[in-house]
Image 1 (cartoon, rainbow, N blue to C red):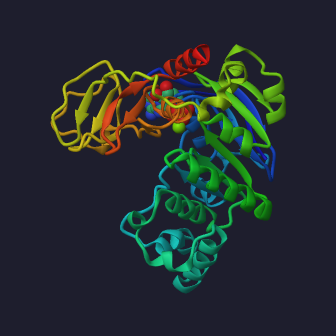
Image 2 (cartoon, helix red, strand yellow):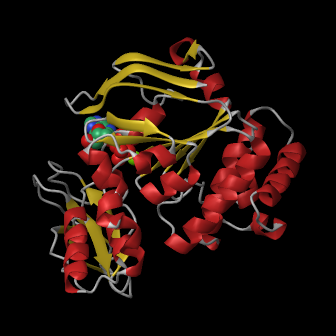
Length: 360
Ligand SMILES: Nc1ncnc2c1ncn2[C@@H]1O[C@H](COP(=O)(O)OP(=O)(O)O)[C@@H](O)[C@H]1O
Ligand SMILES: [Mg+2]
């Protein structure tokens, strides 16, 4: 079991990411942390494997305070999967998966054999093993990320928005696959998402977080839907706003507005606002946080990963998804060529839904 006891995290700049939060995650189940971007999900999750230390309170795994564990040894028992899989671009798929068993002292041969078994386990054909990550689709890369996390057969899996960057259809396939795997493997999974539908589908229990790392409600999905604890949860679960209908409503009534942009590789002045970083084709590359700059050449290091993108011709569900997953709270709308057109907020998406309903 993973247990958070009165955990608080304040970053050196004063930001309180998690506020006095207590939560227990049952062994052998999928527990989901859900909430809008910036509410402290990643911070909370990274305290489990000691990538981040709490300012106060304790995190324990199987009854032992993680501070009493050696970080390297602790992490061997915890698989970690992130958005866009975080694969090593210059290693083949097999070598990516074999990394952990090799570190754990297995022979090259045994590690590669294990990688082959894992490819099969996550539903990928063996011949993909020789490819490099860039030669795979987004969904395939995510599967490889899961296979790599499972390579050392850890009892615990941390999954931080693993499926957020893939489109909704592929995402559903990955979710089904995770449920199938979990039936087979029975891991203790802590899964982070901003997507309430994903949370409800995957979670045996769901913790809804709101800004400032407050736990708004921790309940089984049915109870969350039937009895939301407060207005925040009601809005987030979207029962009264017909959130579930969003997928059926096109986004033509949305009016994206302009957002300040900065180009990767170019000079950037200082600013108090979030700025969208784009490449030479105006395609989004991530977000530059407020109070960054000035700088001579913008590169990936300055950026916070962006959320999912909303294709102009898509539905309101995709637009809300984009807004909730962006660190700026601004969902990026792109045209058919992937170029940024503008941004929308979650409130604007929900207002568009209200307008559309009023009109029908
Ligand atoms: N290293 C850091 N220094 C300062 N603030 C941070 C740092 N990492 C995250 N934050 C801030 O803490 C809050 C929670 O961040 P995070 O845990 O990444 O949220 P989430 O994963 O829910 O999007 C946000 O306001 C974020 O900007
Ligand atoms: Mg996060």
